[in-house]
Image 1 (cartoon, rainbow, N blue to C red):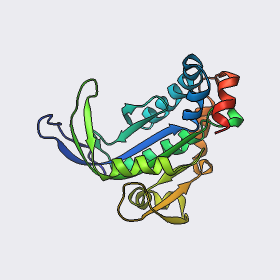
Image 2 (image 1 turned 180 degrees about the vertical axis):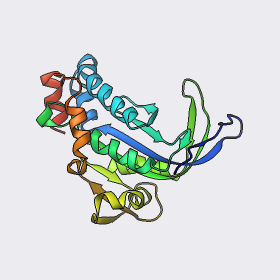
Image 3 (image 1 turned 30 degrees about the horizontal axis):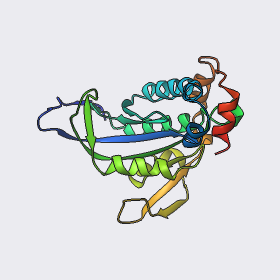
Length: 219
């Protein structure tokens, strides 16, 4: 799309727009919380979460919620450029490639879906409320994903199909969704080499508490 569409968000009435929604979580977080002191939880989670948020923002996503072990991010909240699905999926792939035992870090899993959302004002401190089926599906897809996996919904995949070619689909029943959803698992190996190089040339990897890492990786 040549012209970026800009819209003022009316906090009283809200605004509909097409966007991509990404949820990302750390695998094994509940086990970690149950087995170590909260200070250790923070030492394990904080450095990786810093990196994950930076990745999402690097791809143009806006963080809407941070829930301790994960976050919700929206692409196209204020401006529609036509590549929201591509940026969300690229971010998701980079996110899930950023964790795991080989890096001495907790694993990450994520979900992405696109579609029409309703954006409103929200309760402080959040700036905006984001409502609609894509939000629910992206959250459920994140729950479906295993450690190091990205699950994407049918609308998101339709917009990035040309980048990945054929990917096996599964007809999946997601919690709270009345009809089965065609889901696809995309691996970090699809991440463009340029993005891999950018991340590898960034800040040096951080060490996390060994005890905490063992607990979260075992989940």
